[in-house]
Length: 87
Image 1 (cartoon, helix red, strand yellow):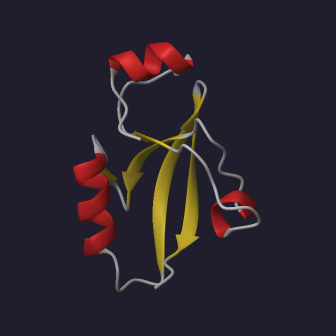
Image 2 (cartoon, helix red, strand yellow):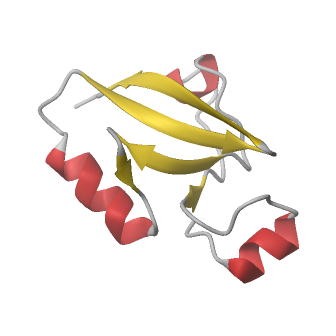
């Protein structure tokens, strides 16, 4: 879900940038790596994600890679995760 001031306020998020993770697949890679609904993805391979268009472009650009590095914000904290690209 694209993040903005209204979404951030509604869900009590610390940032109005990036894209908000709405859900994860049960026992999927994102869940296994610790991603949770409400987390905010701010970067993919050090490229800023401002909206869904940026997210889609970055995923497409990195489709041939085995892994991507993502910056996630949860509450006031940020952390990096390596995620495998699944065809």
